[in-house]
Amino acid sequence: MLDPTDQTILNLLQGNARLSNAELAEAVGMNASSVFERVKKLERKGVITGYVATVNPDKIGKPLLAFIRVSIDANAQTDIDAVNKNVLDACLAENDILECHNVAGEDCYIIKVRAGGPKQLEALLARIRRLTRSSGSVTNIVLSTYKESTRVEPYNEEAAPD
Image 1: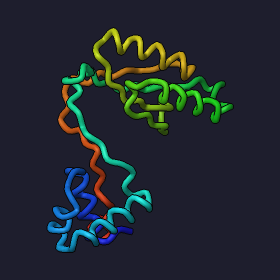
Image 2 (image 1 turned 180 degrees about the vertical axis):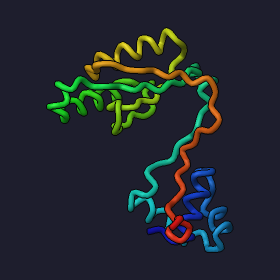
Image 3 (image 1 turned 180 degrees about the horizontal axis):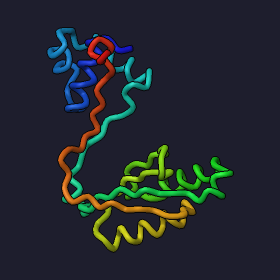
């Protein structure tokens, strides 16, 4: 588990990954070299997996956000490894696919996509259906977004409900 200092460092970096070690050190009451070592340790342990710049999708021509629920034919699920590979290959082949999740329930996969508009989404859907060999899909187009975040709060055992 992470100690409170590591949790604070993670929260700060998730809010602004460009914070310097000196700024982090000031926030947690440590010296910069100690914070640097903690960050490097979090990276080595795989807790921090990378740093990204968030962009405004409207400004780069990708205003349409959609979630696609994909079902796979029951017969195809007998070779689930092949099905999963097809889905993985489709996700890697398509830059407009932001996320893909294998889920329990009525659907097999939920895919988050960004597209330039309805025509681009239609073409992307056709490629996804073909590449995944889906038996069906349902697409939900997002009208408004009230919250979208990449922040993951570290688990705090003391704050967990009983």
